[in-house]
Image 1: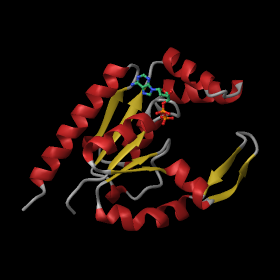
Image 2: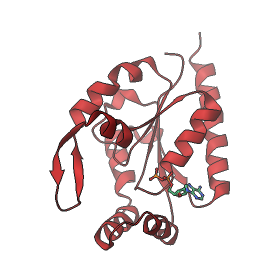
Image 3: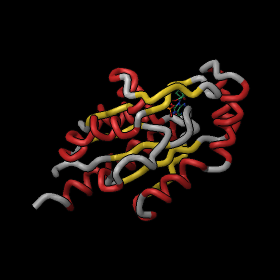
Amino acid sequence: MLLPNILLTGTPGVGKTTLGKELASRSGLKYINVGDLAQEGQLYDGYDEEYDCPILDEDRVVDELENQMSEGGVIVDYHGCDFFPERWFHIVFVLQADNSVLYKRLETRGYNEKKLKDNIQCEIFQVLYEEALASYKEEIVHQLPSNKPEDLEDNINQILKWIEQWVKDNSS
Ligand code: DAT
């Protein structure tokens, strides 16, 4: 494998897509949004009436991604991380935003009151960070602040440096 696989996770609205796309264009790695992939392939298994959204068919998503992941060089973006095979990822970033910042972003998306409240709580209780720590080795899980444009720039530069070092360490 010549390039690493990177997981970007965190509560909806923290900035995974923004970071993932920009990072892909500056690193040459491939960006995959699991939500979009599921929609394109209709990789669903039922419908969640309470949350008013389709339920992801996790096994089919994993099957769909397996070949690309084993080749390496993929940035995966999803607001969940416990169903991917642990071996896929060389590093995991959990993006985080302040409540007030996240609230405004989700409000702009037109989320209803319940969805807003649930997502803000998800962020307050660091649900995705806990999920990442339970699913991957602690030393590869990193939190990244994602409140303002300077955070985005810092995060990109930091990850680009990490990729460069990984490539050096893994070339023989
Ligand atoms: P996600 O993919 O985690 O759901 P997103 O990338 O779509 O989030 O970002 C949600 C909104 O926040 C979008 O309007 C872009 C904005 N945003 C993302 N990262 C940001 C940052 N570091 N500074 C300011 N705004 C940001």
